[in-house]
Length: 88
Image 1 (cartoon, rainbow, N blue to C red):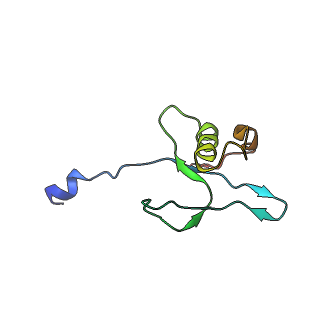
Image 2: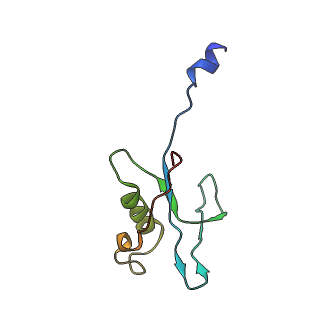
């Protein structure tokens, strides 16, 4: 490995969370804002999990950020069920 390669190794890890919102047979998608690396693309609401924040709270925060508070009054009530973990 060259010195340039070792300065970027190991790669930075980021923990992300997404929220799948269902209403009947409908699924909520958002369009990524201009200036975002995924600008114009559609996805589920998602974002990074900050250190010290639970995945449930991070998902609720992202829903508030990406949607109007008038639509979702208490997003944390939407976050339930089991969490999936890459570690099993």
